[in-house]
Length: 451
Ligand SMILES: NC(=O)c1ccc[n+]([C@@H]2O[C@H](COP(=O)([O-])OP(=O)(O)OC[C@H]3O[C@@H](n4cnc5c(N)ncnc54)[C@H](OP(=O)(O)O)[C@@H]3O)[C@@H](O)[C@H]2O)c1
Image 1 (cartoon, rainbow, N blue to C red):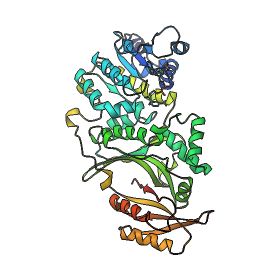
Image 2 (image 1 turned 45 degrees about the vertical axis):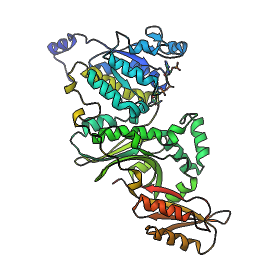
Image 3 (image 1 turned 90 degrees about the vertical axis):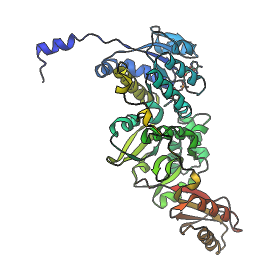
């Protein structure tokens, strides 16, 4: 065993105690309570790394009695969140309330008061990040937000620090655990979207109002923040193309599987010749691709850098302590660098603010993609030829990959196209809708190889 020399060990012990980092919590729900618990349980362990004790000074909630049962009497409890934002004895405010209205003004007020901010709120930053980061820079304080993007996965740290040498080519991933859970259920159990959603709600993986998750908005918030950190661009939330998973049917997951693909809700941000593509949509991913193996509520993010090549990050996409893990990592960063000049800190959005650009985002209508198409028709023998002729007329070279007769004797024709302009696909869908033997709406899902 390594013996610490007497002189050395007493020198370590004589280190003066560092002043605690004084924390105010806005919210003590899933995230806030997890943060409290992990800070309590791992107090010594965190101190050994951060060099400064973490002290929660005040907590704002609505239900004071419930909060008192969690934190006891040693902490100031208030139902007025402004008391935390303005508290004279707080160095850093952790915003774990959610929402974009009150949270925005409270965060701006805390910054204004010279407090650092750690937030878990992707909606807040996607919508108001420009204002919040500018205010923080002007005031010389930190706004940290690791938990807001991929919860337990330190992807912001990876982009801002570990991959700093790279020109990032793309960043993509499964960044909404609820949708991934629903798709996994549909895949494994062969059930429809509505049943899988119900199951997710019953098991606590989906909110009573699941629209933010299943419509792709939550993933759009997150991919905007990833794009900003990857490419040094203004947060492009307003220009993100977002499609959700509510229109998917179990047969599509089954047909995809038979062709060697899984369907995943992806967030993708990629740099092309004419600008950035930033989009959220379901996509077929080859079954041997690492993202295809991400099941249940887990998240994964891949980043392709010109020097690093492709790197993969995987972890829990929701939950009390996984989120607390990222919140506390941010708190430790604040503890370590609060006394540094702003120029010595890692920039909030990875790039020095003077080097950030509002890079153009390519409208989805001018992007290209390969597609999975499922078309329904009656059982007439000429249906298949009519479908292929229609596709060809619109510039889509395609062949039928699968023919599936349904219990009502109608037929599903499944096609994978080559890479085609979005406009050609739209034209083909409009033309297919006019075919007399058609039954139902054509299902169109992008195919993403992420190489
Ligand atoms: N849950 C996750 O796994 C997760 C992961 C990553 C990021 N996030 C983000 O973290 C944030 C919080 O999520 P959560 O799941 O912890 O939410 P939550 O469980 O609903 O907790 C919200 C907390 O904020 C408090 N609060 C809300 N409005 C308030 C007000 N006007 N005044 C005082 N207190 C108020 C609530 O007080 P009461 O307890 O008294 O109602 C509650 O303690 C959201 O932005 C979410 O998107 C969550």
